[in-house]
Image (tube, rainbow, N blue to C red; front, side, top):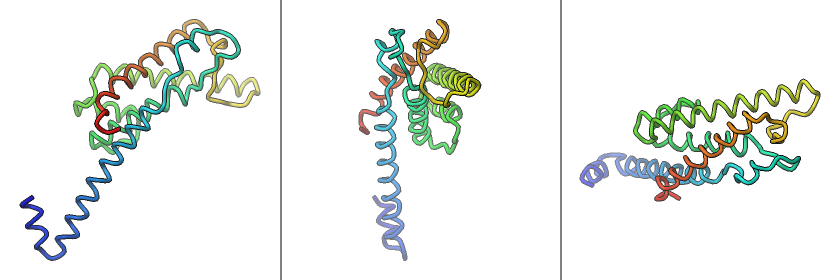
Length: 171
C-alpha cells in the first residue's frame, strides 16, 4: 500500500497504479477462464470405451488432445512461461512445482501417444481415400491400441480431477 501511495503522488503515478491493477485483474480472469476451459473438456465415459460396435466412436482431438493442451496452457500461465509447445509447458509447470513430476511424465507420454495414434489413423484414412478426421471407431483399433487409449483417457481424467481441486478457487 505504501508503494502505491508513493507512486500515486508522482507525475503519471496514478496511471501506473491503474495499469498494474488492470494487469493483475486480467491475469486473474485469464487464470479463471483457462481453468474452466481446461476442466470443460472430458474424456469419453469408460462405458463407451468398453463397447465394440460401430457406435463406439471417439474423437481423439476433442476428448484427449484438447484437454491436455488446455490444462498445459493453464499451468504455463501460472508458471509464467511463454512456451508454446504443450510438452514444454508441462515440463515448465513441473519445474515450477505446480505439477507433480510423475504426472507431467504420464501426461506427456499420453499426449505423445494420442498425437501418434491420430497421425497413424489419419494417414491410413488418407491412403484409403477416406476423409481425414479426428474420430476413430474403436472397432478399427487393435487390442493393444484400444487398451492404451483407455489408459490415456484414465490418465487425463485423473489429472483433471486432481487439478480441479487445485483450480477450485478459480472456477
